[in-house]
Length: 335
Image (tube, rainbow, N blue to C red; front, top):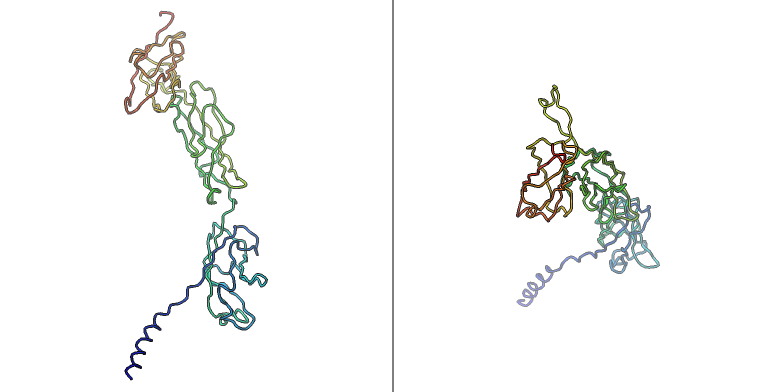
C-alpha cells in the first residue's frame, strides 16, 4: 500500500513535464508583379516532416493556409515529389506588403472549417522587389536661380532630391546633368549643383537638365528638371547719385573710391581659381595693384592688367578666417 502511493506521486510530476511539439518552419520568396499561380521559390515542405499521416490515416488529405493574407496563396501537394508547394493566387505588390507569416493546416476528405485537424507547419513568404518605379523629383519641373557673379567657386548653389519607391539597389540613385557645361557640376551621389568655374562676365543664362537614374535592372530614369541660372552682374546705385527719383542700374565693377566688396570663398578652392574681377573699372585703360597685404605674404594675387583676383596659395580657414585686401586702381593714361 505504501509503495502504490509512492509510485503515483512519481508518475504525476512526470506527466506534467510533457511539452507541446514545435511546428516545423519553412521560408520562401516570390518577386512582386509575378503572374498569378507563380511558385513560391525556395519553399518545399516534405510531407514526412509534418507527419500528416497521423492526422489523416485515411486517404483524401488536403492542406489549407491560415493567417492574415492567406487568401493570396494556395497550398497543394506535389504527389510525385511528396512535397507541399505554395503558389500565388494574385499579383503581389511589395510596396503594399513585403512579407507573410502563415500556418499550414491539414484537412481530411474536405477543407471545410470544421474538418481541419490541426496546424502542422509555419511558413514565411518574402515578397521581393522588382524595379518597377522610376525616380521622381520633389521639386517643380523647372528651377530658376539668380546667382551673384562673385559667388565662390565650389559653392553649392542648389540641391535637387529625387525619391524612388523601390528598395535596395533599385532605390539607389545617381544624378546627372544634360548637356554638360563648364560652369556648373551636379554631384552624382547627392544632387548638389556646384559652381566650378567663374561666371564673371557671362553674357547669358546657363540652362541644363538634371536627371536621376536608379541602379536597378533595367535602370529607370526620372523626368528631367530644367535648371536655369542667371548671373547677377548688376547692382542698384543710390538714387541721389543718379539725379532721378529711382535707382539706376550700373555695373558692379564700376567701383567708386573706397568701395568695399565682400566675398565668400571656400577654403577648398584650388590654386589658380579666379575669385572675382575688378575689371572693367571706370578708367578706359586701368592698372591694378595689390597694396595690402604685400604680394609675397598674400594667398591671393591681383592681375595688373586684367583686375582678376586669383588664389595663389592654399587657403586655410582655421589659420586666417578673414582676409582683407586693398587694391589700387590707376589710370594708365596718367590722368
